[in-house]
Length: 310
Image (cartoon, rainbow, N blue to C red; front, side):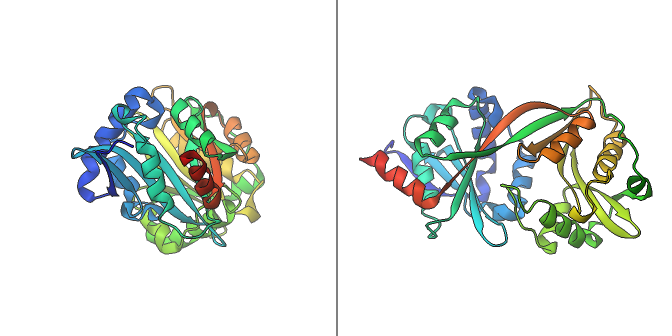
């Protein structure tokens, strides 16, 4: 590693430098960014990121040249650490990424802790990194885009549901957390949310809910932007799935935002979630890109790191 490189925890004052790092990195690898200052500040507020407590910075001569985004996620019975490393183009091939990686591996003590990371197939440096360390491909996130919503067929169950945008999220956070935890429990990126954590997450989201007989059946969280919108998360209570509620809920959201070629809607969905992929296609979403998800235990990564040092 470059002798001038130091690794330290993230500080609040690093925000503008992180945004600048993403801009430099995205010039070489467009899928990495860019990231705006409000987006970065909102990202740090996510419960799993804990204000960037486990994030690490690589610095040279007072300039930020690398970043490791690291968060420990509670899946209920177990935990996983999620990792993303970004290195400035001018600092590559100087073992900056390895130094950040070593520092993150030292955070935990549990040998069988799973470490996950995501890499775009068209990011050669990222793919080479996961290959060197023996990460296993466990699935992909499929980025999908809709420019012309297709109206779903109306089932009896869907026709009976009421769909509305919620302005006071404090009253629905507990039910949103319950449905999220039940619907996403088998997903590789699952993160268990308490009602309090979900309430914090909902503050920065537009919240839509579907209800039947006064009972919440599903939710949709969106992030409207100036020229597009994102579906951050959507789920239907597992005991109420398969009756068209999810399709109707999402269609209402799409039409409420006048989704079109000039104002498209984007979302990410797991390649392992065949049911969701089918629903999104029926509504007019089309795949645009893929991000691969990789996994390895901390023990396996430490062993791979030792082999590289021989």
